[in-house]
Image (cartoon, rainbow, N blue to C red):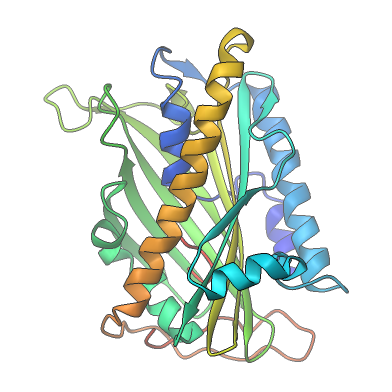
Length: 309
């Protein structure tokens, strides 16, 4: 399967500015360090497992949207609420020299089509407008029917250290049928910018820095029904660890900020979709053969399919 093949590459990851803020809120005390090989190995294994679980659910007998298992959440979404819940019982999960964050967010956008959402999430030049202040700039590098390569500079205005991240991404969009799509996004390059916006601004080497975020991923689904679009996204991030002595205090802060930031990012996407921005030019999509995954991207007017930021 396409996702399984791509997940075999250990560099496939995804962005979440909100989790960057959550991790930074309790790690500002820390100095510069490097990402340890054992930490990266555990992250790669975890990310790979999440990708396989998604693949099995989407192409097996599981529900396309996990939120459909909870009728009360669907009702709340139809009433306008954004629902967010942890994918892990202990979230974040402690690993050697790191923390794995895993959150699921879902929303309903009434009177919208999948194409409406796509025209927002694939318009990377507008990211600094839609997802401010976390996204400072966005730039499209390359775009085809089914894949986008783009870059962003992200920061959190609360950083006392004036730190930002310069990140390159690649997103892939896969069409199951006329009303259902899924996607995943990976990070292909991530560099911390120290003293961002200051005379001493400098880019650190990859995998060096304060470790507010080391890696990111996203696995997303979108379904058009009930007079609108349901969007569900699982957002993963790896940050540096927090000493055990303070984790009992820091943990609730990280969870609260991550939950609120996830909801805020989805809400910003929803607002942008409902404001009906002008169309962007994207190649006309093809439709995958029944049961296939190859044709693959919805286009037209309307942060990548299901890649809400």
